Image 1 (cartoon, one colour):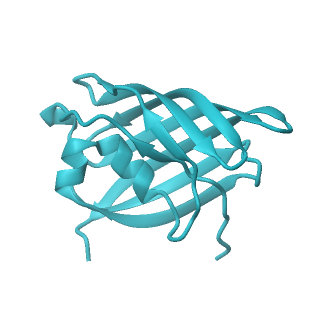
Image 2 (cartoon, one colour):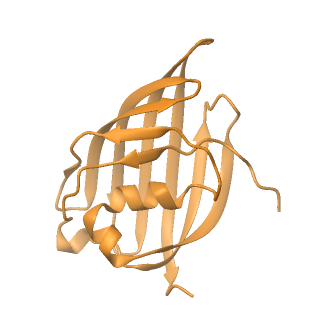
Length: 147
């Protein structure tokens, strides 16, 4: 199986507990990460990650984005404004990111349930070679307990 390397943005978000009905369960999750428009290319990859309850409760969206990074991957760092969460499990935020190739800003959104999550960010990346749109999507599903 060939691994694709592309940037996955590391995020920092304000911590707000999610409504109980939308709280994702701790355990082993399968994440499919799709990136389009990255300077180094794009593509999709699927990986597994063990997500723990305390992180999911404090910042579930950040937990999924952090888990989507490959070990040792150098990623741009993003700060999120306040995450606006709704009782149906949806959330929205604005991200501001810095990377070696330039700054990026744009909206993010998520729909999270106890066993599934879909997160995306659409960032406008300003580089020395011009502006481009970077899209990142994470589709996740809980597949069981952590090993």
